Amino acid sequence: MNKGRVYIISGPSGTGKDTLMKKLFEKLPELAFSISSITRPIRSDEVPGEKYNFISHEQFEKMLAEDEFLEHNLYVGNYYGTPKTPVLKCIEKGQDILIEVDVNGAAQIREKMPDVVTIFILPPSLEELKRRLTSRGTDSPEVIEKRLNEALREIEGSVDYDFVVVNDKLEKAVDDFINILSVDKCKTELNLGLINKILNK
Image 1 (tube, rainbow, N blue to C red):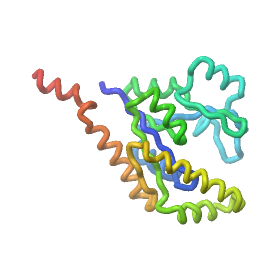
Image 2 (tube, rainbow, N blue to C red; image 1 turned 180 degrees about the horizontal axis):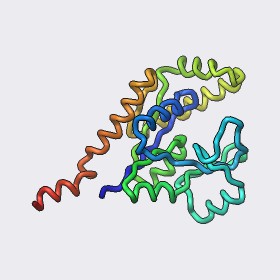
Image 3 (cartoon, rainbow, N blue to C red; image 1 turned 90 degrees about the horizontal axis):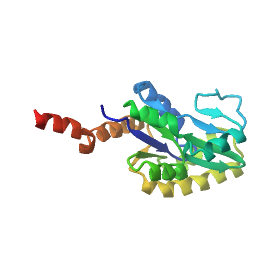
């Protein structure tokens, strides 16, 4: 049995990653999702264990000391991290798993797992990204400007990714993402077992 594959998805705020992932999991229910551990307080619209496990600073630092994270980050006084064990369990049983992280997290994971497949979600333009962030109606102009500057920094890091998906039309972006996963499965290195089985017969 082949091991499962680890796919990383990254992209700036406002590129529609959450909507894309929702559609993706509807079409690929067998694809697992890596739940991050974080130490910030839970928000009113969040469900524990859905996207994040909310833990204490002490718990996080204990896990960190025991090398239980594939990647971690400290942002505005709170820790964020990807636990190692659930990811390894998935791939050992042949199940593919998707990890959502920023460019720094992706680089950390790539160091530990060089065969991960990295996919960056791009907006069709900076103007469209600004429009999406503004239309949310949740941030001040100053915060939006800060998010746009952060987006540019992240997009600079997209050149290190294996694939780029432009999220202009949602359905096409989802199809592009699924096509990447399909193409990845066709790699020769992932089919050596089948090749050798045929040759040995």
